[in-house]
Image (cartoon, rainbow, N blue to C red):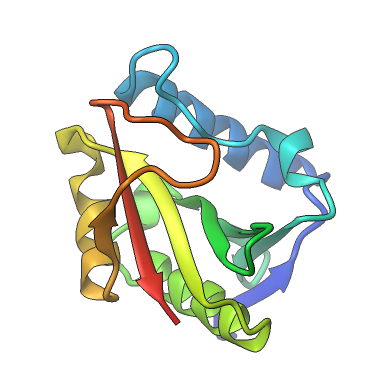
Length: 153
């Protein structure tokens, strides 16, 4: 069965466990005050759509799209299980999010990720999809542990 991406309500034990793993990784790679991931309850708001990625009954990864008030979107909560990385799952989720942002007629996509070496693989994926470095957006402020990226749509 092919990989399936579906809207997720962020309540299943599998999804909550994946989000805990994501949070633990972000906290391990970033100093306190420089982590900007959304906890499960922050992903259950009307302005955020979350998708989970499944290979049969195995949760592979997740991603989210947050609607911003200016008609743009923010990529959030991109995570692939560590034992399944390098197989293109992150790229597939990013393509899904970009396509959905296009369907919503967003003018651009933004994201924040870490500036440390542990975030280099993520930055390379975003760069490969045309994201460019930019100034902080929304409520973000300059932080040496963060980089901000944007891509017009």
